Image (cartoon, rainbow, N blue to C red; front, side, top):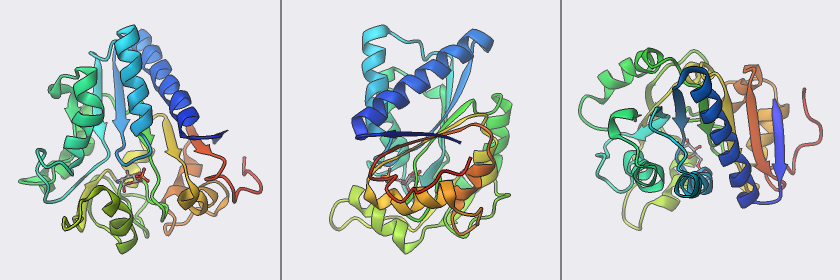
Amino acid sequence: MNLKIFNNSSEIAKFSAEFIIKNLKNNQKLKNKFVLGLATGSSPIETYQNLIKDFKKNQTNWNSTIFFNLDEYIGLKPTDSQSYSFFMRKHLFDDLKVDSKNTFIPKGVGNYEEYANKYDSLIKSKGGIDLLILGLGVNGHIGFNEPPSDFNSTTHIVELTPKTIQSNSKFFKNGQSVPKKAVSMGIKSIMNAKKIILIAYGESKADAINKLINGKIDKNYPCSILQQHNDVTIVIDKVAGKLLKSIKS
Ligand code: GLP
C-alpha cells in the first residue's frame, strides 16, 4: 500500500486530481481509453473541483473515458437531488461536459435489481476499471459494503447500518429521511479494479484508517481487504492518520 499523508483537504485534492489526470493520460496513450470508477460523499468533492479547474484551464480530454459509479440509494430517482446520479452531474459530469452515454451508475429505482446483477459484466465489457476512486465510511465501509461484508460479493443490494444512515444524514435536509437501502458494487467488484485511490480526511475516519492499514483482514472492517490489492494509494490528512503507529508493508 502506498500511503500519502497531507496537512489538509486541499493538499489531498491537489494530489488526488493530479494522480487521476496522470492515469487518464497514461491510459489514453496506451489504449486510447480510460475506465474510471467514482465515489460520492464529501471526500472526493474537492478533487472533482480540481479536475474541473484543470479541464477549464487545459482542456484535458475526457471524451474517451467511461465512468462507473460505486453505488446509489434505493428509492431515489436520478432527478432527486439526494441521488448519487444527481450528485455526479452536479459535482463532475456537467462541468467536464461528459456525454451521458459514457456514464454508468447503479439504478435506485425501477429494475434496479436486474441492473445490479448485470453491472459487473457491464464493467467487464468496457475493459474493467483502470482506476477506482474510493471514500471510506466511518465504520470502514467502502462503496456501501457495510460490515460484516462478503469479500466475494459483486454488485448487490445492501441494508445500510444505523451508523451510515446517521453519518450520511448530513446531506439530507431536515425532514428528509435517508434511504435505508442502497445498491453497491461488491467487494469483489472493487478488488477487480486495476488501481485504487482511497481518499479520507478528518478525525471521524481515524479508526477506520488504522484498521485499513494495520488491522487484520476482517469482514467486520470491509476496508481491510484492500491490504490484499496490489495497487492501492491511500490519501489522508494527519488527523485521519493520528492512530497510525506503525505501517504494515
Ligand atoms: C457514502 C458512500 C461511500 C463514501 C462514504 C463516505 O457512504 N456510499 O462511497 O465513501 O459515504 O462519505 P464522506 O466522504 O462524506 O465521509
